[in-house]
Image (cartoon, rainbow, N blue to C red; front, top):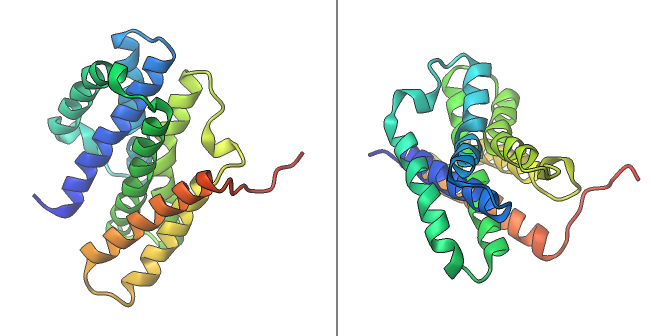
Amino acid sequence: MNLIYTLDLIGTFVFAISGALTAASKKFDLFGAAVIAFVTAVGGGTLRDLLIGSQPVGWMQDLNYLYLIILAVPLSYVLRPYIQWLRHTMFMFDTIGIGIFTILGLQKTLSFGLEAPIAVMMGAVSAVFGGVVRDTLCNEIPLIFREEIYATACLAGGILFLLLATQIADTKLVTFITVAFIITIRVFAVRYKWRLPTGG
């Protein structure tokens, strides 16, 4: 099992849990939670694949993605009563997800022969669009539209990946560094309340 595939499965699982936990906090039933988990886990990758012309989209070609989403929903409900810091847990799953999907989306876009700026954009789309759909369906303002450092961390991570890839031949190492970089920016941004300027 190669690194990209493994990370893709991990990202799908953690995003599905993020979606299911959000749905649980909104008192959704299991079916509603399954819908939210599904769109959170595969929404960004689906949009990316449609935009770059990769069809059928990734999750339709491998049932392991659906199995992980199905597993994540009941697991989230079973574990939820034992999670004392639910908000923190949701945040960490979401943060890990955006770190993984940013780099995977960027790499897949590059593999289709598209230019680096487009790849960075598609990496961000892969990472944040599922969360946009999740928050919209759960009647929340999507994080990407708030002043928090969110999509900006994905864009910065994508640029760092491209820069490191010109200096380091080990793609696995570059992937690890940039995923960790995105996660670190997001964690520090929330902890120290880093914000982007607003129009108000």
